[in-house]
Amino acid sequence: TQLLEQSPQFLSIQEGENLTVYCNSSSVFSSLQWYRQEPGEGPVLLVTVVTGGEVKKLKRLTFQFGDARKDSSLHITAAQPGDTGLYLCAGEDAGGTSYGKLTFGQGTILTVHP
Amino acid sequence: NAGVTQTPKFRVLKTGQSMTLLCAQDMNHEYMYWYRQDPGMGLRLIHYSVGEGTTAKGEVPDGYNVSRLKKQNFLLGLESAAPSQTSVYFCASSLYRGLVTQYFGPGTRLLVL
Image (cartoon, rainbow over all chains, first blue to last red; front, side):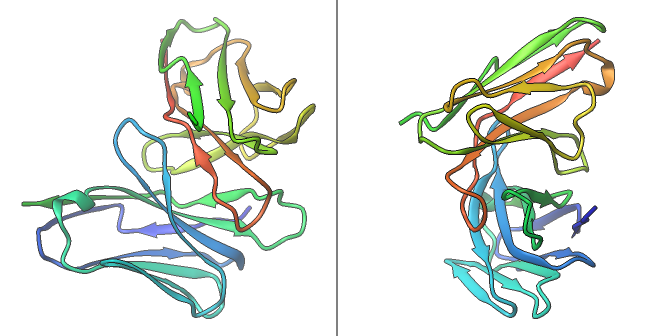
């Protein structure tokens, strides 16, 4: 069974601060996805990283895939109250018969105070 | 397009009762998934389907059954609900496996007393 350890579990910061969320595993993934979930709604995909060492930017969000494709990070610059939500990482099995199954991390609840 | 819809949004059951959760997607997606979300545990896959008429077990299938009689619908059944099945259930769909977006429904909140 593949596991994804996500940290921290909770993050409470002031508007304008920077933050980083980590997603670590001992398993190799073929891709790593980051989702954001708002209360009462389902997760929504933010980004998919595929290549080891890949860096993708989405406005103030920077996503990085580790060289060995076992870990990933999400960095938010100058956080805003609108960034508040649950952030989930999800790895796609590198095996051949996974049928697109995703292994999710536990999630990081981010609260950005005005 | 409505995307992925789930029915009902909220339900309270007594231990031992049965119910069916309905998921519908209008994107002509081949793959559909049922997850449960519990505090501090992320999303865990219950069952999934790779096409009409096919289903397979995920990570936590015990106590649940599924059916995919039509491509656009994926049903999750609880034959005899237990308090441990209190959770938020999410359905998702994707066009194919791998490197594709999974689109999630809004969730069904289930409380088993």
